[in-house]
Length: 558
Image (cartoon, rainbow, N blue to C red; front, side, top):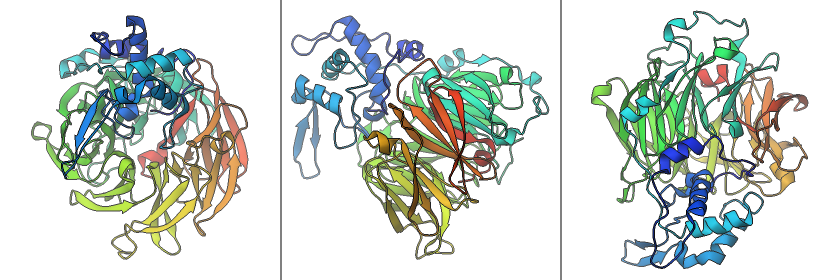
């Protein structure tokens, strides 16, 4: 299931999209077996979509989480047949699993859902899953809205601020993005976006065809599939310039190296859509259904992550359940070239090496980091790491023994794994584990900056509050933890995600309140990157999660 969110009015921003997604599906009739009232079925359907589908899939066939179909059967290569399913587990067992979680990494939902919600949700997943509809280009076009015409875009910033040191911050619970001035620490705007924005990307510097004013335009992707375009040169009240919906459930977005196109990836329907970066007009949609690396057909093969390759006219599309990276060449949309690169399941998130040639992405269910050579468009290596790697935006740095390295945190264990990533100059160390750091708890994000002596790792997945609320700082020189910082002692809060300011002198950490709220309940805590001492706190934010510095993100600073 997804990261825990206490439900105080949860789903308010999702209701319209969910109604569109599953509104025509009603509770199936059963001659015998589990049943729910129509009201309980609809409520549980929404709960499942919000809390469970991200890991277990809309069709419940599993990915990072286990298969939750009422009954499933799997035949091994040797002919052995294994059967299981939620019906076999039964009501009582399912309620315990949802309430108390599992050692395999599923969250404890006893303080997130009510007893009745847990009971109904357990019954719901013993019933046949409703199948949601597809989405055509025409349906996407019907959702497009223009708030500022292209002819009215300013030719220079209208606010006189250092916009390259702005931070674009996800405010998860209220479906907004905050724009914060990194110099003055002022919150300039709260921009309405899609529900529970997962990722925000900017136009980036590119070696082949430089986009105009890299970092000026930002594109968000909400879990409801809504893509919004933000112009940082506008006055705060005009920064939202347009939007379009490309899926019912989605996670990621990226901008072509020339700044002409934007690609959005869907969880449902399992596809990616390419839109015009200026007008947000949908141009092309491509299904990602297909055969996985095990030779099995997968209907719900979702797009987990998308990245713009810094040196090639391509995007990398991580097709989660297939265990494939698709390198999509956008130089000719009419004759779209897609190189499908087999690797491992289930692909999630990643980052480039400093040269921009090699992409390093977590295959979390396989406990591997996958490396793709974007120049030759092929698999370069697969690195065995600890349980459930999750690097987030990742981190590259220089190690005194192994030379250039990269690292990841893990969802399944308190470990930071570090490997060499310079095959040209350090071939003997490339794609091999250099060392591991034992941390206090499993985490989601790791981050550093070329001007910093340290690597920062969070521990958000640990169940103990004190550890969940703390971050650990690792020395690049020694590979040892030099400081553990507890950013809060407030109940129901966690420390999550890091971002450095433009020159690398500050580290911004989110104090993330786990309770959904329509009131500002989170903060960003700012630390001196050299002394590791707290400098300031930015309040008035709604569950701030990901933070993205304009200069660092548009210049590939990892």
